Image 1 (cartoon, one colour):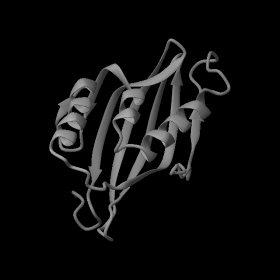
Image 2 (tube, one colour; image 1 turned 30 degrees about the vertical axis):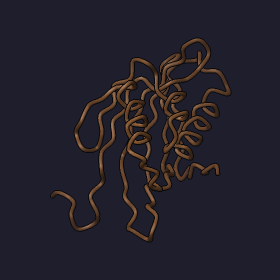
Image 3 (cartoon, helix red, strand yellow; image 1 turned 120 degrees about the vertical axis):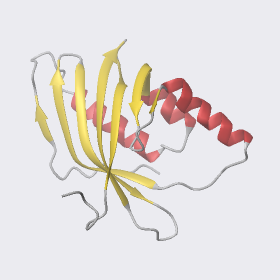
Image 4 (cartoon, one colour; image 1 turned 45 degrees about the vertical axis):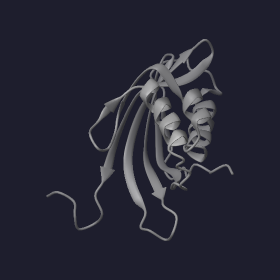
Amino acid sequence: MKQAIQLCALSLVFASAGVAAGDADEILELLDDFLAHAGERQAHERFWDDDLVYTSSAGTRTDKASILASFEAAEDGGENEQGPVYTAEDVELKWLGDTAVVAFKLVASPPDDLPRMYYYNTGTFVKRDGEWRVIAWQATKIPPPGEQAN
């Protein structure tokens, strides 16, 4: 089931005239498809570049190979637990030639009526061999109201 990206405040800032008209739509569709299938290995294979640097909201740094290996470990352990449904809000794209930076608020809606979790995400997409892929990603958990730092 495909999730719609909630474009509450989509802004496109073009730093280069070399951006093709369909690139923004392509990246937003790629993000939308990835979020809709984030629990599937195939989505991660397509989304992440082989040179990925991923910094999680827990402060760990990893790469594409480690992310893909985590799916193998889950399969070996028989884990088929339903994860959250992910959507994106307040998406912004900024461009520099064949590089795009996306920043958005990730909404994680867990099953079983658990409270939603929110994260700021920033990713850097590069276009290689005609395909957009993410080469760098940073996730930051947004504390629940009342728990935010002063």
